Image 1 (cartoon, one colour):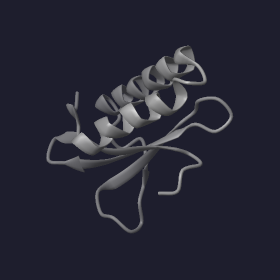
Image 2 (image 1 turned 30 degrees about the vertical axis):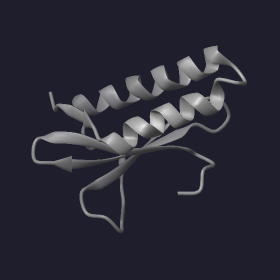
Image 3 (image 1 turned 180 degrees about the vertical axis):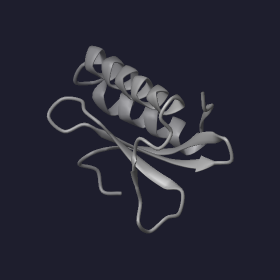
Length: 94
């Protein structure tokens, strides 16, 4: 199993996404974060699951379905661990 580490920017992204959804539905906000955490855990067994980025060596993006659009987890493989770098809603300007 490959260990996963969330970088500070990605942790901030989770907070931001949760804060955005909370006024609309606390339940949806909690489910979104839970879905993202569950998806990230799949990288422990399948670290190359996400699509490689053409412009950044060792970086990948994992699409995560949620609602009608979903989210994107950007991560990179570094040594023997997965580093979660950023998380966005699929419609966000990256």
